[in-house]
Image: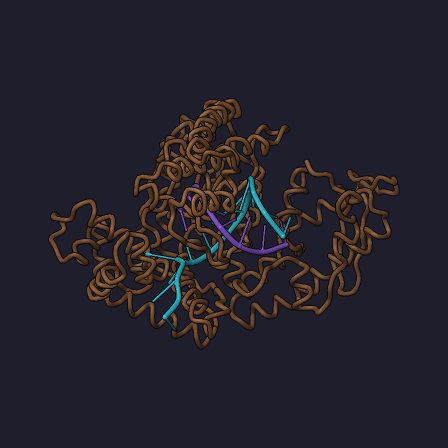
Amino acid sequence: MAKLVGISLSTKIGKACYIPLNHKDHQNLNEKEVLKILKPILEDVSIKKIGQNIKFDFIILYHRGISMNSMEDTMLMSYVLDAGKNRHNMDTLSQIHLEHKPISYKEIVGVGKKQISFDEVEINKAKDYAAEDADITYRLFKKFFKNLKAEKLTNIYEIFEKPLIKILSLMEIEGIKINEGFLKKLSDKFQNKIDKLEKDIFKISKKNFKIGSTKQLGEIMYNELKISTLKKTKKGSFATSASVLEDLAFKGHLLPKYVLEWRQLSKLKNTYSDTLPEHINPKTNRVHTSFLLAATSTGRLASSDPNLQNIPIKTSDGNDIRKAFVAEKNKSLISADYNQIEMRILSDLADVKELKKAFKNDEDIHSLTASQVFNTDIKKVNSDMRRKAKAINFGIIYGISQYGLAKQIGVSTTEASEFLNSYFLKFPEIKEYMSSTIKFCRKSGYVNNIFGRRTHITGINDKNFNIRNFQERAAINAPIQGSASEIMRMAMIRISEKLKDNKIYDTKMILQIHDELIFEAPSKDTTKISKIIKKEMTSVQNSELHSFTIPLSVDINVGDNWGVLH
DNA sequence: CCGTTCACG
DNA sequence: ACGTACGTGAACGGG
């Protein structure tokens, strides 16, 4: 548990105080006594508590028996106002909005070898630094409060941000159990395979080199073995990305084939099987990620330390990592994921008649797309046609270009262009959505999602063709991705309330992976709990802000580890 | 500290 | 003429 070195407070602009609790020079007030006095204030629902990233403070206090209420967060206010414009850390906000550069943390604790921990900072210095934080936060709050009102964004902050503070805090505190021994065995298995591949690679290259070095690998492939024709990255170095290596492997070259396998296994080992155990908290024996509420431009969450939103699934070796995420004894993991959420949103957002009909009839959307694009009966759609149609649907959500599509499905740009023409002919509303979204964005500098959240697109009128195109695709994608994230936020809020209302305290929501939620529940109750989860997630179709004209669909899976939930 | 690569939705 | 699919975070190599 993190040590509480001190607390800074402000109740009036220009005035702030610092309460030292655990400085090493012992000039402290007693932590227990101070918290005893503060607890009724912090828990009082009628007294506002303003913080910058207050989820952090909530967690610290929760571990000391205080459950803070009535929380406001300047980081989240800035996020609602300015997502896509700037980052939302206090340093940045102070400089932008208060034209004041705060005392830097580095200034106080030093850098490198001479760096000290905050409890070693002299109290007077700590006071200046920490009290300034409190003052800045209060000043930012007053400003953002007005700005949210003026921009009519208060609702977004109140409905989609504030409730998530406590929900995510409790998820982080709960954490998830990891089978450490299982991961150790996986690491050993990966290492053996890596060693074999290394030998095979060096046999071909006739010399040892760092396989992980793109520079050295490029040198080998382009200059020594000369198996690759010149392909350069943006910066002019030899391209060694997976797609380049795949091309060469397809032509029959073994070295790139082995390097691809080596990279995949190294990634799994270095990033997951070796590293996840280091994140196990010895007190709880569980892994506690941090969910970032203000990291993305679209409204999505992000996860870090460790990132549990990018745990492998696509390959068999990768999915083994998921098997290490387990439920406690007599408990099960429940996963609940929204099916085709972004295509559903697009069909509602752009009012795509044919797609809406298909979702209402619960049809296979990619097969339908294939039948439309390739002008054939849906029963005659083969797997290759469906694969291409699926890629088109994904591409549409990303703000498609004929080049991107061609690259993705391995056809000429002419052919990709023909697919797209055919697509837009069948779904003209999508083309209309794209051009009207870009048009709106060009004159306003931002886009809104279905619920009214804004994403600023700062380079939409850039004179550079590539930058502008990139920003146009982001403008098309943001309302789709962003609306989906709002749906998930509402579902999380509704489920939390429902579990509370029904006094179901032994089921915990523990992870969110954009369109999927993971719960840990008593094994005997999973049927009952699953029904509640599914009902709440589906019910988001109707809310005070929007009623969808398509149904939402949720898949539920239950198991004793994450690896079996798909 | 940045660029490249690759894991996820 | 140009030539990228959208949104993230982590690890690594090499200045």
